[in-house]
Amino acid sequence: MKQQVLEILDKIRPSLQADGGDVELVDVSDDGVVKVRLKGACGSCPMSTMTLKMGIERTLKAQIPGVKEVVRVEE
Image (cartoon, rainbow, N blue to C red; front, side, top):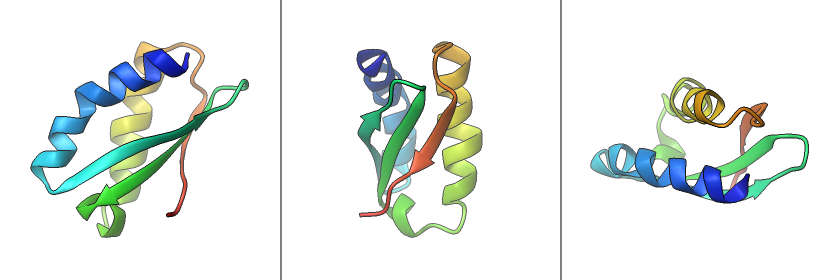
């Protein structure tokens, strides 16, 4: 599943980079929890929770059935 998550994040990444941010995969647990680190502008943006849940999590859950949740890991 980790490889699938990486492939999806690579598709999402250009949108984040266009706004000066990025996303880094930290871990994918056996129970479907994906841990990511938001970087650059995304790390301090007030809308980062919306980006995480409505953007990244929704996309991953729609394309990879095993993903249960996406959580943010601080730097």
